[in-house]
Image (cartoon, rainbow, N blue to C red):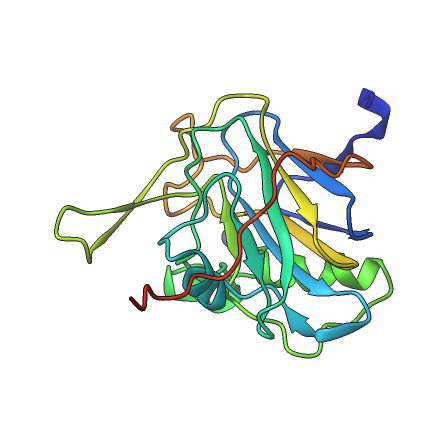
Length: 221
Ligand SMILES: [Zn+2]
């Protein structure tokens, strides 16, 4: 991999890519401060998409960890985390930001947002998403679960410049990213809360040493 192979997710914008099963995609937090929202769809049927709620059942975990597999609304594996050099703080709870979220935050003009970025990015590849969802995987986003085990606290990222996470495709799929334009709620790091570029590259390495997860089933002894 060289610098030339890197694809930019411009600050406040989206970018999508297609992956063949067994390829991987390394997402780099270039400046170490950026939250990147992520969605994925089955390439030959965009009504099947990566599901945060089905993934929480699959892994029995609040938020994804190294080695975890993400599944679709049809409970099929779609992505697995095969590398993560960041502190491993990612969020699967928070809805992606959209136009209405910024209106509720008091913004009176159009504010770029992850939801529109996702639609634009996939459209650039020539696809139209039939039922776009706010339920994104929010990579590098720091949403802490509080000691009462039910309240959440929205905090800035804890990543360093150059930290990366790598996802292996478990099926032919489309993956979309948005370098989150959020500049009102303090979620981006470095205290200035300014959205910045992130980058990714596609790898032919399938990381066979990381098997991924099978669905959780209850102990029935
Ligand atoms: Zn956003």
